Image (cartoon, rainbow, N blue to C red; front, side):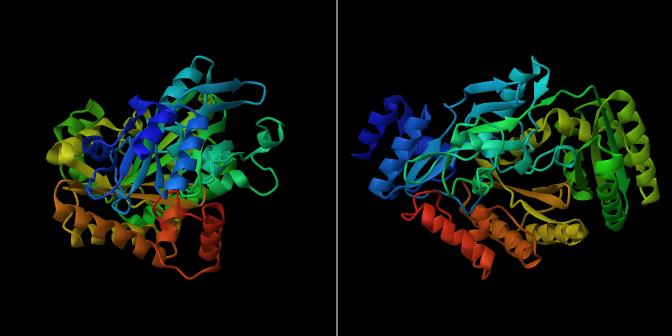
Length: 469
């Protein structure tokens, strides 16, 4: 009866138990499991679906656009309802008076910023990819953190459907005061930001808005020693807020990643600057390259670019290698090159596993080696099916180690799971951290983890939300 009951809530067009559709959304199909793909069109429908799931004992897995076809091997198919939020994509309110915008969970950040650009406004992205849905954006470690603060500072309010089906407004709008502050007593907004669907379903998000920048510039500094890169990052952290407020994005890549890119014609030939960079190196890649996007007033950007170059020289940089790859990374954060590499690797069944985690800046060299060792131990070779990037935040480095694998190959899936778990377990041993759903999936004995588990039990006593616990 569940299929019919779901159809009564959202309509028959927006419910499916087709194995093909389940596979397209979860990259896994198990015939002995009860799985439905549901596309609600409103917060009311989300609430009704969640209430039904509670009654039937089914899990609810919220999903945005699955932009990068990146599947965590920890979250493959379970019995339950996959809640596809992509029908909910309204821009509910643009308020220049408070410089806020409220949107539904299924709209992409790219679409939102396209709408805002006509008003000379934008929101700061919380993810690597602007084509992700806003619900996924709430947990992103994205660009702009150095200048505008972390994601937790960019989102003022969330509309959340709790596991009970109740609808919660987390910020001051919950008191009828409007979207003025994320704090309504304790930080309820922060509680749900990185819960990744494990505590409730985010149905709408209220962002701060900003003016579009007057000028942009790009630089990429090469380092032959990772220790020199670390010193440069520490220097930027010390100088950034006061002397270098134009620093918008700081993303870096090791030699292994350039090896993969140079072997792919669609990246090598992406533009003349990419080709010139590879031709200059002649296969001898710098150990590390950090790319920086500067934004602000024209005179400010030019001045701070000079200061940053001097800092890089003082820290042992071998020089600025030109505008790529950070310009390409900034302009197209979905990155056609990586997407094409993914598609070309093994066809349409290819997936990514990316155990993202954060560490202290001084831990970056060790974190870099942990991911490489884990990849090669599981048969994913650097420059072939493994690459990595990282982003410098205000106080931490976000690590993005990726492996590509064929999701139709059972052995490859098992090795991807092993890689994913190994990286996160080793990162946890180093004192690094990840968002709440992965932390709670790891057996850790700490007061903080215990409190998070108790919060989960209090909000979701039937274990409806997300199959991580």
